Length: 541
Image (cartoon, rainbow, N blue to C red; front, side, top):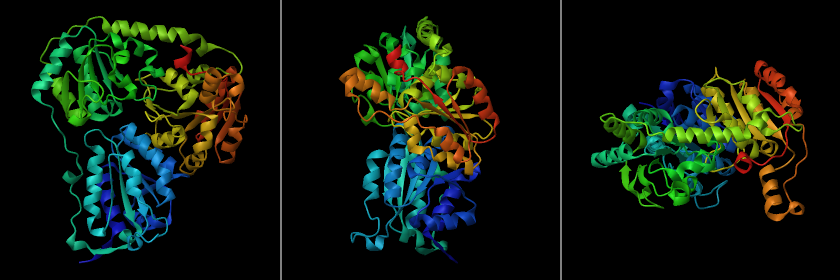
Protein backbone atom coordinates (compact mmCIF):
# COMPACT_ATOMS: atom_id res chain seq x y z
CA UNK A 1 0.00 0.00 0.00
CA UNK A 2 1.01 3.61 -0.49
CA UNK A 3 -0.33 7.12 -0.39
CA UNK A 4 -0.90 9.68 -3.12
CA UNK A 5 -2.00 13.27 -2.92
CA UNK A 6 -4.84 14.96 -4.75
CA UNK A 7 -2.50 16.51 -7.33
CA UNK A 8 -1.14 13.10 -8.26
CA UNK A 9 -4.68 11.84 -8.73
CA UNK A 10 -5.48 14.77 -11.03
CA UNK A 11 -2.42 13.96 -13.12
CA UNK A 12 -3.14 10.22 -13.20
CA UNK A 13 -6.67 10.79 -14.52
CA UNK A 14 -5.50 13.32 -17.10
CA UNK A 15 -2.76 10.98 -18.27
CA UNK A 16 -5.30 8.18 -18.61
CA UNK A 17 -7.78 10.37 -20.51
CA UNK A 18 -5.09 11.81 -22.79
CA UNK A 19 -2.86 8.71 -23.11
CA UNK A 20 -4.25 7.47 -26.44
CA UNK A 21 -3.11 10.77 -27.92
CA UNK A 22 0.44 11.20 -26.65
CA UNK A 23 1.55 14.80 -26.86
CA UNK A 24 -1.78 16.36 -25.93
CA UNK A 25 -0.85 19.54 -24.07
CA UNK A 26 -2.09 21.09 -20.87
CA UNK A 27 -2.42 24.80 -21.61
CA UNK A 28 -1.52 26.69 -18.48
CA UNK A 29 -0.23 29.73 -16.63
CA UNK A 30 1.51 29.12 -13.33
CA UNK A 31 0.33 30.09 -9.86
CA UNK A 32 0.95 28.96 -6.31
CA UNK A 33 -2.25 26.95 -5.91
CA UNK A 34 -1.52 24.68 -8.88
CA UNK A 35 2.17 24.03 -8.27
CA UNK A 36 1.38 20.59 -6.78
CA UNK A 37 -0.09 19.59 -10.17
CA UNK A 38 3.04 20.77 -11.96
CA UNK A 39 5.20 18.73 -9.62
CA UNK A 40 3.14 15.57 -10.15
CA UNK A 41 2.86 16.27 -13.87
CA UNK A 42 6.62 16.26 -14.33
CA UNK A 43 6.82 12.70 -13.01
CA UNK A 44 3.95 11.60 -15.28
CA UNK A 45 5.38 13.24 -18.39
CA UNK A 46 2.52 15.69 -18.96
CA UNK A 47 3.22 18.28 -21.63
CA UNK A 48 2.71 21.81 -20.31
CA UNK A 49 2.34 24.71 -22.75
CA UNK A 50 2.37 27.92 -20.74
CA UNK A 51 1.16 31.26 -22.02
CA UNK A 52 1.25 34.87 -20.87
CA UNK A 53 -2.37 35.36 -19.82
CA UNK A 54 -5.04 33.00 -18.50
CA UNK A 55 -7.54 34.17 -21.09
CA UNK A 56 -5.09 33.23 -23.82
CA UNK A 57 -4.42 29.72 -22.54
CA UNK A 58 -8.18 29.19 -22.23
CA UNK A 59 -8.51 30.20 -25.91
CA UNK A 60 -5.75 27.69 -26.75
CA UNK A 61 -7.64 24.90 -24.98
CA UNK A 62 -10.82 25.93 -26.81
CA UNK A 63 -9.10 25.75 -30.21
CA UNK A 64 -7.59 22.37 -29.32
CA UNK A 65 -11.07 21.04 -28.51
CA UNK A 66 -12.47 22.28 -31.81
CA UNK A 67 -9.60 20.88 -33.87
CA UNK A 68 -9.24 17.47 -32.27
CA UNK A 69 -12.66 16.70 -30.79
CA UNK A 70 -10.89 15.90 -27.51
CA UNK A 71 -11.34 18.19 -24.50
CA UNK A 72 -8.72 20.90 -24.40
CA UNK A 73 -7.28 21.09 -20.89
CA UNK A 74 -6.65 24.51 -19.36
CA UNK A 75 -4.97 24.76 -15.96
CA UNK A 76 -4.90 28.08 -14.12
CA UNK A 77 -4.48 29.28 -10.58
CA UNK A 78 -7.09 30.56 -8.14
CA UNK A 79 -8.78 33.95 -7.86
CA UNK A 80 -7.67 36.28 -10.66
CA UNK A 81 -6.22 33.36 -12.59
CA UNK A 82 -9.68 31.82 -12.64
CA UNK A 83 -11.54 35.04 -13.47
CA UNK A 84 -9.06 35.87 -16.24
CA UNK A 85 -9.90 32.54 -17.89
CA UNK A 86 -13.66 33.10 -17.91
CA UNK A 87 -13.78 34.92 -21.25
CA UNK A 88 -12.11 31.91 -22.84
CA UNK A 89 -14.62 29.65 -21.09
CA UNK A 90 -17.57 31.64 -22.44
CA UNK A 91 -16.06 31.71 -25.94
CA UNK A 92 -15.71 27.93 -25.91
CA UNK A 93 -19.27 27.53 -24.64
CA UNK A 94 -20.87 29.34 -27.58
CA UNK A 95 -18.43 27.64 -29.96
CA UNK A 96 -19.58 24.22 -28.63
CA UNK A 97 -15.99 23.28 -27.93
CA UNK A 98 -15.11 20.47 -25.48
CA UNK A 99 -12.83 21.94 -22.85
CA UNK A 100 -11.83 21.31 -19.24
CA UNK A 101 -10.98 24.37 -17.13
CA UNK A 102 -9.12 23.30 -14.00
CA UNK A 103 -8.59 26.10 -11.52
CA UNK A 104 -6.66 26.01 -8.31
CA UNK A 105 -8.62 27.24 -5.32
CA UNK A 106 -8.24 28.81 -1.93
CA UNK A 107 -7.82 26.23 0.83
CA UNK A 108 -11.02 24.68 2.16
CA UNK A 109 -9.68 24.90 5.71
CA UNK A 110 -10.20 28.67 5.58
CA UNK A 111 -13.51 28.60 3.69
CA UNK A 112 -15.79 31.42 4.75
CA UNK A 113 -13.05 33.16 6.72
CA UNK A 114 -11.66 35.36 3.97
CA UNK A 115 -8.82 33.11 2.83
CA UNK A 116 -6.28 34.27 0.25
CA UNK A 117 -8.04 34.66 -3.12
CA UNK A 118 -11.16 33.03 -1.73
CA UNK A 119 -14.22 33.34 -3.98
CA UNK A 120 -17.04 31.19 -5.24
CA UNK A 121 -15.32 30.10 -8.44
CA UNK A 122 -18.00 27.56 -9.29
CA UNK A 123 -20.74 30.21 -9.17
CA UNK A 124 -18.65 32.50 -11.38
CA UNK A 125 -18.08 29.79 -13.99
CA UNK A 126 -21.45 28.05 -14.02
CA UNK A 127 -23.38 30.47 -16.30
CA UNK A 128 -20.55 30.25 -18.84
CA UNK A 129 -20.20 26.49 -19.27
CA UNK A 130 -22.09 23.20 -19.24
CA UNK A 131 -21.32 22.30 -15.62
CA UNK A 132 -19.04 23.31 -12.75
CA UNK A 133 -17.96 21.63 -9.53
CA UNK A 134 -15.52 21.96 -6.65
CA UNK A 135 -13.59 19.02 -5.23
CA UNK A 136 -13.94 18.78 -1.46
CA UNK A 137 -11.51 15.89 -0.90
CA UNK A 138 -8.73 14.11 -2.71
CA UNK A 139 -10.82 10.94 -2.53
CA UNK A 140 -13.44 12.30 -4.93
CA UNK A 141 -11.00 13.75 -7.50
CA UNK A 142 -10.89 10.75 -9.88
CA UNK A 143 -14.67 10.43 -10.18
CA UNK A 144 -15.15 14.19 -10.55
CA UNK A 145 -12.56 14.46 -13.30
CA UNK A 146 -14.01 11.50 -15.17
CA UNK A 147 -17.46 13.06 -14.93
CA UNK A 148 -16.13 16.40 -16.18
CA UNK A 149 -14.45 14.72 -19.17
CA UNK A 150 -17.67 12.90 -20.11
CA UNK A 151 -19.90 15.95 -19.74
CA UNK A 152 -17.59 18.03 -21.96
CA UNK A 153 -18.23 15.53 -24.76
CA UNK A 154 -21.89 14.59 -24.21
CA UNK A 155 -24.84 16.05 -26.08
CA UNK A 156 -23.69 19.38 -27.45
CA UNK A 157 -19.96 19.48 -26.64
CA UNK A 158 -18.79 22.33 -24.46
CA UNK A 159 -16.57 23.47 -21.62
CA UNK A 160 -16.81 22.35 -18.00
CA UNK A 161 -15.05 23.62 -14.89
CA UNK A 162 -13.55 22.03 -11.79
CA UNK A 163 -12.11 24.00 -8.86
CA UNK A 164 -9.31 22.18 -7.05
CA UNK A 165 -8.59 23.78 -3.64
CA UNK A 166 -4.90 23.77 -2.82
CA UNK A 167 -5.33 21.73 0.35
CA UNK A 168 -7.27 19.10 -1.60
CA UNK A 169 -4.31 18.88 -3.99
CA UNK A 170 -1.97 18.43 -1.03
CA UNK A 171 -4.18 15.97 0.86
CA UNK A 172 -2.87 12.39 0.98
CA UNK A 173 -5.06 9.31 0.62
CA UNK A 174 -4.46 5.57 0.59
CA UNK A 175 -4.02 4.62 -3.07
CA UNK A 176 -5.33 1.10 -2.48
CA UNK A 177 -8.75 2.51 -1.59
CA UNK A 178 -9.12 4.29 -4.94
CA UNK A 179 -10.04 3.12 -8.41
CA UNK A 180 -8.99 5.27 -11.35
CA UNK A 181 -11.56 5.74 -14.12
CA UNK A 182 -11.76 3.03 -16.75
CA UNK A 183 -11.88 3.92 -20.47
CA UNK A 184 -15.65 3.43 -20.33
CA UNK A 185 -15.91 5.96 -17.50
CA UNK A 186 -14.44 8.59 -19.83
CA UNK A 187 -16.77 7.93 -22.76
CA UNK A 188 -19.81 10.17 -23.30
CA UNK A 189 -23.30 8.73 -23.32
CA UNK A 190 -25.22 8.88 -26.59
CA UNK A 191 -28.94 9.32 -27.19
CA UNK A 192 -31.12 8.22 -30.11
CA UNK A 193 -34.05 10.23 -31.38
CA UNK A 194 -37.52 8.68 -31.72
CA UNK A 195 -37.39 6.53 -34.90
CA UNK A 196 -40.88 7.66 -35.93
CA UNK A 197 -39.78 11.29 -35.75
CA UNK A 198 -36.66 10.47 -37.76
CA UNK A 199 -38.79 8.92 -40.50
CA UNK A 200 -41.09 11.95 -40.46
CA UNK A 201 -38.12 14.29 -40.79
CA UNK A 202 -36.69 12.38 -43.76
CA UNK A 203 -40.10 12.38 -45.43
CA UNK A 204 -40.31 16.17 -45.07
CA UNK A 205 -36.86 16.62 -46.56
CA UNK A 206 -37.73 14.28 -49.44
CA UNK A 207 -40.88 16.26 -50.25
CA UNK A 208 -39.10 19.62 -50.13
CA UNK A 209 -38.36 21.62 -53.25
CA UNK A 210 -35.99 23.94 -51.43
CA UNK A 211 -34.54 22.06 -48.43
CA UNK A 212 -31.96 23.77 -46.25
CA UNK A 213 -29.70 22.36 -43.54
CA UNK A 214 -28.19 24.67 -40.92
CA UNK A 215 -25.76 23.28 -38.36
CA UNK A 216 -24.33 24.90 -35.25
CA UNK A 217 -20.54 24.66 -34.80
CA UNK A 218 -20.14 21.17 -33.34
CA UNK A 219 -22.46 19.62 -35.94
CA UNK A 220 -19.73 20.09 -38.54
CA UNK A 221 -16.89 18.55 -36.50
CA UNK A 222 -15.76 14.99 -35.91
CA UNK A 223 -18.18 12.10 -36.47
CA UNK A 224 -21.16 14.44 -36.56
CA UNK A 225 -19.52 16.39 -39.39
CA UNK A 226 -18.76 13.25 -41.37
CA UNK A 227 -22.38 12.09 -41.11
CA UNK A 228 -23.78 15.55 -41.82
CA UNK A 229 -21.81 15.86 -45.06
CA UNK A 230 -22.92 12.36 -46.08
CA UNK A 231 -26.55 13.31 -45.44
CA UNK A 232 -26.23 16.44 -47.57
CA UNK A 233 -24.77 14.43 -50.42
CA UNK A 234 -27.42 11.72 -50.14
CA UNK A 235 -30.35 14.13 -49.95
CA UNK A 236 -29.04 16.65 -52.49
CA UNK A 237 -29.55 19.37 -49.89
CA UNK A 238 -27.42 22.49 -49.32
CA UNK A 239 -25.95 22.89 -45.85
CA UNK A 240 -24.28 25.77 -44.05
CA UNK A 241 -22.40 26.22 -40.79
CA UNK A 242 -23.78 28.78 -38.36
CA UNK A 243 -20.73 29.51 -36.22
CA UNK A 244 -20.10 33.24 -36.54
CA UNK A 245 -21.47 36.16 -34.50
CA UNK A 246 -22.74 37.46 -37.84
CA UNK A 247 -25.06 34.46 -38.14
CA UNK A 248 -26.81 34.39 -41.50
CA UNK A 249 -24.85 37.46 -42.63
CA UNK A 250 -21.53 35.71 -41.97
CA UNK A 251 -19.17 36.96 -44.72
CA UNK A 252 -18.15 33.36 -45.45
CA UNK A 253 -21.67 32.83 -46.84
CA UNK A 254 -21.00 35.54 -49.45
CA UNK A 255 -24.54 36.89 -49.20
CA UNK A 256 -26.31 33.55 -49.62
CA UNK A 257 -28.04 33.93 -46.25
CA UNK A 258 -30.42 36.42 -47.84
CA UNK A 259 -31.88 33.53 -49.86
CA UNK A 260 -32.67 31.32 -46.86
CA UNK A 261 -36.24 32.63 -46.35
CA UNK A 262 -37.11 30.94 -49.66
CA UNK A 263 -36.54 27.48 -48.17
CA UNK A 264 -39.60 25.30 -47.67
CA UNK A 265 -38.06 22.82 -45.16
CA UNK A 266 -35.22 23.64 -42.77
CA UNK A 267 -33.27 21.06 -40.79
CA UNK A 268 -31.69 22.95 -37.88
CA UNK A 269 -29.03 21.20 -35.84
CA UNK A 270 -28.66 23.46 -32.86
CA UNK A 271 -30.45 26.24 -30.99
CA UNK A 272 -32.99 28.76 -32.24
CA UNK A 273 -30.75 31.63 -31.17
CA UNK A 274 -29.79 35.06 -32.52
CA UNK A 275 -27.45 33.52 -35.11
CA UNK A 276 -30.45 32.09 -37.02
CA UNK A 277 -32.67 35.08 -36.33
CA UNK A 278 -34.46 33.09 -33.62
CA UNK A 279 -35.79 30.95 -36.52
CA UNK A 280 -38.18 33.78 -37.38
CA UNK A 281 -39.74 34.55 -40.74
CA UNK A 282 -37.19 37.22 -41.65
CA UNK A 283 -34.43 34.61 -41.34
CA UNK A 284 -36.07 31.34 -42.38
CA UNK A 285 -39.36 32.38 -43.91
CA UNK A 286 -42.35 30.09 -43.42
CA UNK A 287 -40.38 26.87 -43.89
CA UNK A 288 -41.39 23.76 -42.00
CA UNK A 289 -38.84 23.28 -39.26
CA UNK A 290 -37.03 20.13 -38.15
CA UNK A 291 -34.89 20.76 -35.09
CA UNK A 292 -32.23 18.54 -33.53
CA UNK A 293 -31.13 19.21 -29.93
CA UNK A 294 -29.82 17.06 -27.06
CA UNK A 295 -32.72 17.90 -24.73
CA UNK A 296 -36.42 18.59 -25.24
CA UNK A 297 -36.05 21.89 -23.38
CA UNK A 298 -33.95 23.27 -26.23
CA UNK A 299 -36.55 22.51 -28.90
CA UNK A 300 -38.88 25.28 -30.02
CA UNK A 301 -37.70 28.05 -27.72
CA UNK A 302 -38.51 30.74 -30.27
CA UNK A 303 -40.62 28.93 -32.86
CA UNK A 304 -42.45 25.59 -32.67
CA UNK A 305 -40.70 22.78 -34.50
CA UNK A 306 -42.75 20.68 -36.91
CA UNK A 307 -40.50 17.73 -36.07
CA UNK A 308 -38.43 17.49 -32.90
CA UNK A 309 -35.44 15.16 -32.83
CA UNK A 310 -34.07 14.88 -29.30
CA UNK A 311 -30.62 13.30 -29.18
CA UNK A 312 -26.97 14.06 -29.73
CA UNK A 313 -26.16 15.32 -33.21
CA UNK A 314 -23.85 12.50 -34.32
CA UNK A 315 -26.32 9.78 -33.35
CA UNK A 316 -29.35 11.55 -34.82
CA UNK A 317 -27.48 12.25 -38.06
CA UNK A 318 -26.60 8.57 -38.28
CA UNK A 319 -30.30 7.74 -37.91
CA UNK A 320 -31.30 10.29 -40.55
CA UNK A 321 -28.65 9.03 -42.94
CA UNK A 322 -29.73 5.41 -42.56
CA UNK A 323 -33.36 6.24 -43.41
CA UNK A 324 -32.37 8.67 -46.17
CA UNK A 325 -30.33 6.00 -47.94
CA UNK A 326 -33.47 3.90 -48.31
CA UNK A 327 -34.98 6.56 -50.59
CA UNK A 328 -34.29 7.84 -54.09
CA UNK A 329 -33.48 11.54 -54.11
CA UNK A 330 -33.59 14.03 -56.98
CA UNK A 331 -32.06 17.46 -57.25
CA UNK A 332 -34.45 20.39 -57.58
CA UNK A 333 -32.15 23.14 -58.81
CA UNK A 334 -32.27 24.86 -55.41
CA UNK A 335 -28.57 24.23 -54.88
CA UNK A 336 -27.85 25.92 -58.21
CA UNK A 337 -29.88 28.96 -57.15
CA UNK A 338 -27.85 29.33 -53.98
CA UNK A 339 -24.59 28.83 -55.84
CA UNK A 340 -25.60 31.56 -58.30
CA UNK A 341 -26.30 33.89 -55.38
CA UNK A 342 -22.89 33.08 -53.92
CA UNK A 343 -21.13 33.80 -57.21
CA UNK A 344 -22.97 37.10 -57.47
CA UNK A 345 -21.83 38.02 -53.98
CA UNK A 346 -18.24 37.20 -54.88
CA UNK A 347 -18.51 39.17 -58.12
CA UNK A 348 -19.59 42.34 -56.34
CA UNK A 349 -16.48 42.47 -54.17
CA UNK A 350 -14.01 40.90 -56.61
CA UNK A 351 -12.49 44.28 -57.65
CA UNK A 352 -11.27 44.83 -54.09
CA UNK A 353 -9.32 41.56 -54.20
CA UNK A 354 -7.08 43.08 -56.90
CA UNK A 355 -7.03 46.77 -56.11
CA UNK A 356 -3.65 48.49 -55.83
CA UNK A 357 -5.01 51.23 -53.58
CA UNK A 358 -2.84 52.58 -50.77
CA UNK A 359 -3.46 52.11 -47.87
CA UNK A 360 -4.02 48.46 -48.71
CA UNK A 361 -7.62 47.31 -48.97
CA UNK A 362 -8.27 44.65 -46.28
CA UNK A 363 -9.75 42.26 -48.88
CA UNK A 364 -6.61 42.57 -51.02
CA UNK A 365 -4.58 41.67 -47.92
CA UNK A 366 -6.77 38.69 -46.98
CA UNK A 367 -6.86 37.41 -50.57
CA UNK A 368 -3.06 37.51 -50.86
CA UNK A 369 -2.66 35.57 -47.62
CA UNK A 370 -5.23 32.89 -48.45
CA UNK A 371 -3.72 32.50 -51.91
CA UNK A 372 -0.55 31.13 -50.30
CA UNK A 373 -2.35 28.54 -48.19
CA UNK A 374 -3.09 24.93 -49.09
CA UNK A 375 -6.08 22.71 -48.31
CA UNK A 376 -5.87 21.68 -44.67
CA UNK A 377 -3.96 24.75 -43.49
CA UNK A 378 -5.47 26.70 -40.61
CA UNK A 379 -6.80 30.25 -40.48
CA UNK A 380 -7.43 31.72 -37.03
CA UNK A 381 -9.73 34.72 -37.07
CA UNK A 382 -10.35 37.42 -34.56
CA UNK A 383 -13.47 39.55 -34.41
CA UNK A 384 -13.54 43.07 -35.78
CA UNK A 385 -13.36 44.34 -39.32
CA UNK A 386 -10.21 42.56 -40.52
CA UNK A 387 -11.56 39.25 -39.25
CA UNK A 388 -14.71 39.77 -41.34
CA UNK A 389 -12.73 40.55 -44.47
CA UNK A 390 -10.57 37.49 -43.88
CA UNK A 391 -13.69 35.39 -43.35
CA UNK A 392 -14.92 36.49 -46.78
CA UNK A 393 -11.61 35.59 -48.41
CA UNK A 394 -11.23 32.25 -46.62
CA UNK A 395 -14.83 31.20 -47.26
CA UNK A 396 -15.86 27.76 -46.04
CA UNK A 397 -14.65 24.27 -46.70
CA UNK A 398 -11.11 24.75 -47.97
CA UNK A 399 -9.22 25.74 -44.85
CA UNK A 400 -9.66 24.82 -41.23
CA UNK A 401 -11.02 28.13 -39.98
CA UNK A 402 -11.01 28.77 -36.26
CA UNK A 403 -13.33 31.66 -35.47
CA UNK A 404 -13.67 33.87 -32.46
CA UNK A 405 -17.08 32.19 -32.37
CA UNK A 406 -20.66 33.22 -31.73
CA UNK A 407 -19.69 35.17 -28.61
CA UNK A 408 -18.12 37.76 -30.91
CA UNK A 409 -15.20 38.72 -28.69
CA UNK A 410 -11.79 39.81 -29.87
CA UNK A 411 -8.38 38.58 -28.81
CA UNK A 412 -8.29 34.82 -29.52
CA UNK A 413 -6.57 34.77 -32.94
CA UNK A 414 -2.94 34.32 -31.84
CA UNK A 415 -3.80 31.82 -29.08
CA UNK A 416 -6.00 29.91 -31.54
CA UNK A 417 -3.11 29.78 -34.02
CA UNK A 418 -0.71 28.48 -31.37
CA UNK A 419 -3.04 25.59 -30.54
CA UNK A 420 -3.59 24.87 -34.23
CA UNK A 421 0.13 24.65 -34.88
CA UNK A 422 0.51 22.20 -31.97
CA UNK A 423 -2.43 20.12 -33.19
CA UNK A 424 -1.24 20.17 -36.82
CA UNK A 425 2.52 20.65 -36.70
CA UNK A 426 3.08 20.10 -40.43
CA UNK A 427 0.44 22.59 -41.63
CA UNK A 428 0.70 26.32 -42.07
CA UNK A 429 -1.30 28.49 -39.73
CA UNK A 430 -2.18 32.17 -40.09
CA UNK A 431 -3.76 34.45 -37.50
CA UNK A 432 -5.67 37.53 -38.70
CA UNK A 433 -6.07 40.30 -36.12
CA UNK A 434 -6.58 44.02 -35.97
CA UNK A 435 -4.19 46.48 -34.39
CA UNK A 436 -6.56 46.98 -31.46
CA UNK A 437 -6.70 43.23 -30.91
CA UNK A 438 -2.90 43.02 -30.77
CA UNK A 439 -3.16 44.70 -27.39
CA UNK A 440 -5.07 41.71 -25.99
CA UNK A 441 -2.71 38.82 -26.65
CA UNK A 442 0.14 40.11 -28.80
CA UNK A 443 2.60 38.90 -26.18
CA UNK A 444 1.53 35.34 -26.89
CA UNK A 445 3.98 35.66 -29.76
CA UNK A 446 6.52 35.18 -26.97
CA UNK A 447 4.83 31.84 -26.26
CA UNK A 448 5.08 30.91 -29.94
CA UNK A 449 8.80 31.74 -29.90
CA UNK A 450 9.46 29.77 -26.71
CA UNK A 451 7.73 26.67 -28.08
CA UNK A 452 9.10 27.11 -31.62
CA UNK A 453 5.70 27.34 -33.26
CA UNK A 454 6.04 29.12 -36.63
CA UNK A 455 2.65 30.76 -36.91
CA UNK A 456 2.21 33.89 -39.05
CA UNK A 457 0.30 36.76 -37.44
CA UNK A 458 -1.21 39.30 -39.85
CA UNK A 459 -1.93 42.60 -38.11
CA UNK A 460 -4.23 44.85 -40.11
CA UNK A 461 -3.24 48.29 -38.85
CA UNK A 462 -5.69 51.12 -39.44
CA UNK A 463 -4.85 52.92 -36.18
CA UNK A 464 -8.16 52.37 -34.49
CA UNK A 465 -11.08 50.31 -33.33
CA UNK A 466 -12.54 50.24 -36.82
CA UNK A 467 -15.95 48.63 -36.26
CA UNK A 468 -16.82 51.06 -33.47
CA UNK A 469 -15.40 54.02 -35.36
CA UNK A 470 -17.48 53.22 -38.43
CA UNK A 471 -20.65 52.77 -36.40
CA UNK A 472 -20.17 55.99 -34.48
CA UNK A 473 -19.71 57.91 -37.73
CA UNK A 474 -22.79 56.31 -39.27
CA UNK A 475 -25.13 56.57 -36.29
CA UNK A 476 -23.93 59.63 -34.40
CA UNK A 477 -21.96 61.66 -36.94
CA UNK A 478 -18.35 62.30 -37.93
CA UNK A 479 -17.75 64.67 -35.02
CA UNK A 480 -19.08 62.18 -32.45
CA UNK A 481 -16.30 59.59 -32.66
CA UNK A 482 -14.79 58.82 -29.26
CA UNK A 483 -12.52 56.12 -27.77
CA UNK A 484 -11.95 54.61 -31.22
CA UNK A 485 -8.60 55.99 -32.36
CA UNK A 486 -5.18 54.43 -31.78
CA UNK A 487 -1.64 55.25 -32.84
CA UNK A 488 -0.21 53.65 -36.01
CA UNK A 489 2.11 51.63 -33.79
CA UNK A 490 4.84 49.48 -35.33
CA UNK A 491 3.68 46.14 -33.98
CA UNK A 492 6.30 44.46 -36.14
CA UNK A 493 8.96 46.07 -33.94
CA UNK A 494 7.26 44.64 -30.85
CA UNK A 495 7.19 41.18 -32.44
CA UNK A 496 10.81 41.49 -33.54
CA UNK A 497 11.84 42.27 -29.97
CA UNK A 498 10.11 39.06 -28.88
CA UNK A 499 12.21 37.03 -31.32
CA UNK A 500 9.86 36.83 -34.29
CA UNK A 501 10.52 37.39 -37.95
CA UNK A 502 8.71 40.69 -38.50
CA UNK A 503 8.08 43.18 -41.30
CA UNK A 504 6.12 46.36 -41.96
CA UNK A 505 4.12 46.40 -45.21
CA UNK A 506 2.62 49.52 -46.76
CA UNK A 507 2.02 48.73 -50.44
CA UNK A 508 0.12 45.90 -52.19
CA UNK A 509 3.13 44.87 -54.27
CA UNK A 510 5.06 44.28 -51.04
CA UNK A 511 2.56 41.77 -49.70
CA UNK A 512 3.46 38.55 -51.48
CA UNK A 513 7.25 38.81 -51.02
CA UNK A 514 6.79 39.66 -47.33
CA UNK A 515 4.40 36.75 -46.84
CA UNK A 516 6.76 34.31 -48.53
CA UNK A 517 9.63 35.48 -46.32
CA UNK A 518 7.43 35.06 -43.24
CA UNK A 519 6.39 31.50 -44.17
CA UNK A 520 9.95 30.55 -45.08
CA UNK A 521 11.55 32.05 -41.97
CA UNK A 522 10.89 28.94 -39.88
CA UNK A 523 10.05 31.25 -36.98
CA UNK A 524 6.89 32.81 -35.59
CA UNK A 525 6.29 35.81 -37.80
CA UNK A 526 4.34 39.04 -37.68
CA UNK A 527 3.43 41.29 -40.60
CA UNK A 528 2.23 44.75 -39.58
CA UNK A 529 0.19 45.83 -42.61
CA UNK A 530 -1.07 49.38 -43.10
CA UNK A 531 -4.66 48.94 -44.28
CA UNK A 532 -7.52 51.22 -45.22
CA UNK A 533 -10.25 51.53 -42.61
CA UNK A 534 -13.22 50.09 -44.51
CA UNK A 535 -16.47 48.68 -43.09
CA UNK A 536 -16.85 44.90 -43.13
CA UNK A 537 -18.22 42.92 -46.11
CA UNK A 538 -21.66 42.76 -44.49
CA UNK A 539 -21.86 46.53 -44.82
CA UNK A 540 -20.08 46.76 -48.17
CA UNK A 541 -22.03 44.19 -50.21
